[in-house]
Length: 350
Image (cartoon, rainbow, N blue to C red; front, side, top):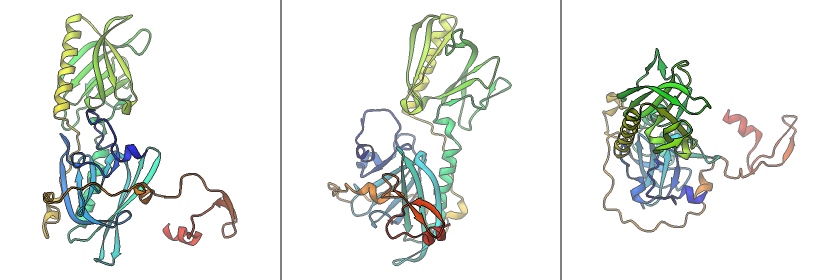
């Protein structure tokens, strides 16, 4: 678990981890925007309230939220938008700032739940924190660009429902899906972001395969003859999808086109997250402008943060269910509360 959270992965892998992982203390190259990732806004003077209590920079991109300490850029947090379950902005009182705003981010990653609290110490921050909510919503509404989809509402009257940034290059008829013994006759739509197949007899029997989730594209021999085989990434289920295309010239053309568009996408991916801050919120204080990163900070080896994970757990002691105890106030058996926590406090949260 620690290896996953502290960035010990194969750096040569084309897998897009930025929106699907939570990482602590990553190398500076890893917190820099990857190809296709856009920085939407940057806010200075943001405190990591639940963790280090340091001031830092909060960067919002189309794939993640990144907090970086001002003292040491190797002290950082990268929160993928796909890991976020809820985002809330609450008014709080700070000893340093007085009345201000805090951003509460609840996440789930590898069956663990983490809570992050970022408190603003500068003016004109409420709009930016709302920007995080807007970006998260835009990300959630654009999953077809990035996620494999089976039996979705993709086809209407035998035509592909195009995504806002999508362009269709080819429509290929007479394509058999080899998932069944006899094969199902259908058609391909090949676009700049995905490959879509649907059955001629049932439009809702379909599959949308984003290039982002393709692991390999090959031609293989099968009992139906030579077939096009698309293998998806483990993150999308690790499917091996076979398609029979006749004649051979059409099969070769489809194989070359999908392979070419896949390579083009890999060099310049389209993630589909479209968000533009409200221009009315950009006035006054300039807190929403994209601030340049500090270039004169000395990069040193990070201190030992072996307990960094525990600070962000939504329930830091929740490694396993606690023993049940009788609660006289409720007249029920409940899970034993954490030390220092009372039933009254729990009800006050609600």
